[in-house]
Amino acid sequence: PVILGIESTCDETAAAVVRGTTLVSNIVASSMEEHARYGGVIPEIASRAHAEAFVPVVSRALADANMDLSDIDAIAVSAGPGLAGCLAVGVSGAKSLAWAANKPIYGINHVIGHVSVTQLQFGALPENTMALIVSGGHTSLLHIDDIARSIEVVGTTLDDAAGECFDKVARLLGFPYPGGPHIDRHARLGDPTALKVPMGLTQGRAGAEHPYDFSFSGVKTAVARWVEGRRADGKDIPVDDVCASLAQSVASVLSRKAIDACRSRGSDTLIVGGGFSANSQLREHLAEAGREAGVDVRIPEIKLCTDNGAMVAMLGSNLVTAGVAPSSPDFPIDSAMPLDSISMA
Ligand code: ATP
Ligand code: MG
Ligand code: FE
Image (tube, rainbow, N blue to C red; front, side, top):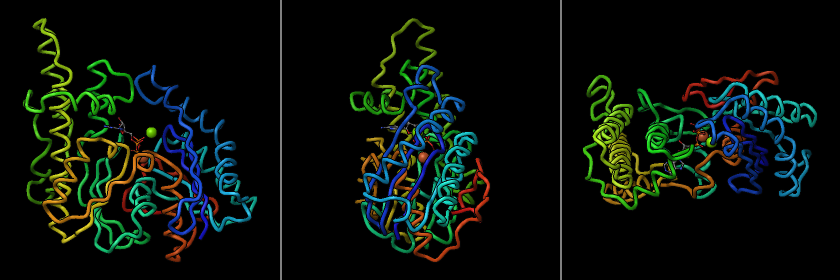
């Protein structure tokens, strides 16, 4: 099927056309720079930017594909999770297009889109796949047999997401938002053993019962205390070492738990997605852990890791191919859409 995918959950307005598992066009506009001086995404500014970018971005995605709406089999749009005002712009725009062109519409789960998108680079998902989704808003381990029909949440963060933890430490060190990429760059220059950073959560919230949950707020607090203590003593901050120690702690917990989760289910494929999967320390840790464990680790190129329309279109393509019914024409947005909900009824 030919699917137009539309994304507006946070600060990217994006649209893409996918045919089957082939990416035909992919356009992303970001309002990230407008938020930088506030130190985080301002929902009002982001929604307004979506309203301005929606028509140009969608038109460009269709034009790049040499198509108009009549060539599309279905429209897919992120219905959640995300910022309500942002979701509302993309979803109402997509509904208008679907109505005008008389096409079915799928309101899909953005986070599951981060899993789906890997098919554009690596081909179809095998049965019994594990997925690690890491971004500014999510840190989750998902088990998938059929991406169009059922998702099992194996683990999730109990507090901060990995990207959020990096962004908060980055802010403390004086880097502009989003700070994750700055930590990554400095971490490459530092000594990862310089600071003792706690290893996130090694047990689950109920010990052995939930062994694949994460917790990063203690990591953030430990680094903050260390940095503030040195500042109070009038000592300078070895920024590269702080970044390297933080990155080492977070990357090793994420990769260890992801590979353990694969082992526990007998999964030999691990899909990795979300903006934080751009992190080079995580990529290195996962590549090595995957090699040792005999797990095929699939991390897509960075432009497919961060928010985009291709991920939405690809999940739409999976749903159409599987014969899943479209969403009702008046489906609502769900800013807290649960991870086991793949698309809106
Ligand atoms: P959602 O959680 O809904 O998917 P999001 O907008 O936070 O939303 P992404 O755009 O997928 O998700 O990810 C952005 C996050 O990824 C930010 O926290 C950013 O700091 C982090 N990030 C991006 N590149 C890197 C990197 N190289 N190293 C560490 N963190 C990174
Ligand atoms: Mg973003
Ligand atoms: Fe995302």
